[in-house]
Length: 414
Ligand code: GLU
Image 1: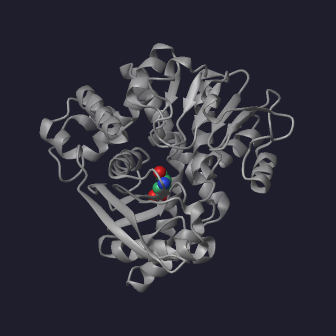
Image 2: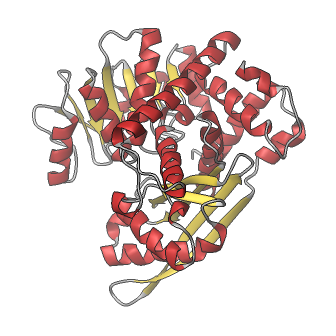
Image 3: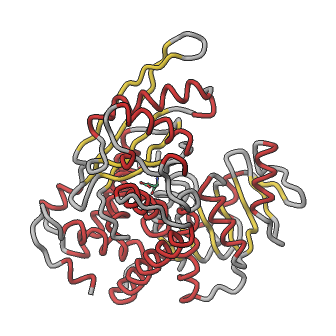
């Protein structure tokens, strides 16, 4: 079974070699500062009480408050949140927002709960977590399976416990959310892809998107509106292919009516997991970690994999892809748009500002493009892949701040 925590540690070890990281610093970065586990009892609609397992991993706060989403998914476990929290540390450092890394989750299938049950569970989680979070301590946000509505309930609960609205990001607009936050991860991914394409000049601009939740949809939509061709989309129920390209808005409308992208008109149906193996220039895994692994990596036909999910490519798979000259744009760069606009939201809340959608988009583009170009430059100069280049930059920024031994790593930025 794929273990994201061992992947995350492996990646850190690899970069430690490249930057000659002090052994003790490596050891310290290889563990989260704290992992909280809760058993969350809630009353179900049938009158019984059920306990759900909840977590929050706080990996590192040397650059600022812990930051990262909360995931509602049946697969959530301690190793997963630990890995996701470490990746958040690197992501926040890479885009240079003043946060550390954290991640939370509840082992639950939110689709199987009624709205009332979901509200109780969301509130219970925050009730238990409230002593450990705060606008300058730990700032959670949405992740897989968590809607703005859930964040709204969580905010209401947080306020009851004396916390301020900047304790959570990804809030609905009326509760202090930011313009542009919902589409931010997909939009940021598109900015990265388009910047990459200035360097590699893809001819057909064909894209296959694996996973059609918030991130997959917005990434596909924005790419489509900018002249890319969406030739395949999958969700957990199935997948569709259409070499002429589809309009993501029409696919979403169809999915909202039928529950899946499966059987979308004028398209060929294939099994969901076969979507990764179809010919395309760009493959965008936008669901869960570990989907591209040693068992299927050698069958991948894409030229570029853009990691819109966190951790979709395992370290073993990455080696195979590298041998086959497939470019992997790492998650901490590709999907950093979400946390970047979370930072804008937190900043607006703290300064009583409200930015326009246009301002958010411009600032996001500027930040992401800058990060991409820094990573690209390091990758070329040191002849390392994009993930290692991104890690060199991110890890050196974390190590170079207060709390760690001074090192030579800041030189990598130049
Ligand atoms: N869950 C998102 C991520 O993995 C966003 C985190 C945030 O906004 O804090 O990057």
